[in-house]
Amino acid sequence: MVSIIPSSGGVFEIKINDELIFSKKELSRFPNDDEVEEIIRERLF
Image 1 (tube, rainbow, N blue to C red):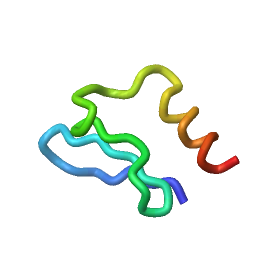
Image 2: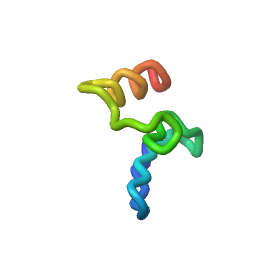
Image 3: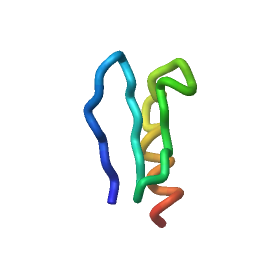
């Protein structure tokens, strides 16, 4: 299951089955174009 969980303070995190796959907070940036989609494909397929 892919989840986008709302939060506050500018945190943008995406998890697959409770595994953090992208964190704006950790990387100090938003994802590049198609970056999240590529990570999801790698993890699910």
